[in-house]
Length: 200
Image 1: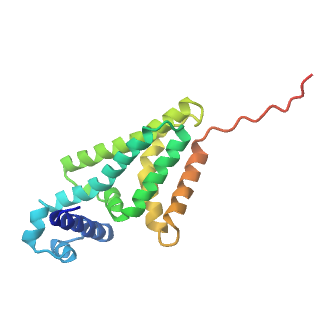
Image 2: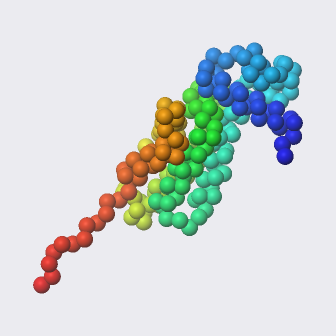
Image 3: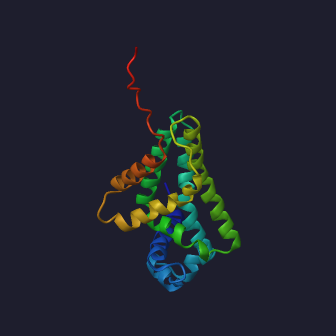
């Protein structure tokens, strides 16, 4: 069970992510953060070292979660197509559960200092490398066509912006299915038609 301090920290991260996603990091002042979480300045800084550290923690939380869950997906014996679908489903669930933090993750990278950018970029690359690995494995065994995997860099943006713009009108599962249907159609190797030649 979370301690009272952990509950407060979670409340700070959740409320701050909502504000940063809606107003931007630089457009959100400390007074707004304090009002949103119901703390004074001293109580706020008891849990959070600085505004930039707060931004980093908001960014780390969702990417660390999918790093962990994607490791489990890649550790199964499933074929590449199934793993790719499972990566998409997992990411869709993560987006639906914490879209504000994912929006901040995508939009506010430039607000970080050099060290913060390096830490976020490292996590981002580690995660996208899991998608690359599955796509490369699928191409090697004939499930997928040979591809320039540069498009993988757009995966997080594709999911985030689809959910941001369509979440009010479309269920998360439908959004994920739509994205993955298009993606799989583009990467799957064409089926080899059966020969229609008549035997002598």
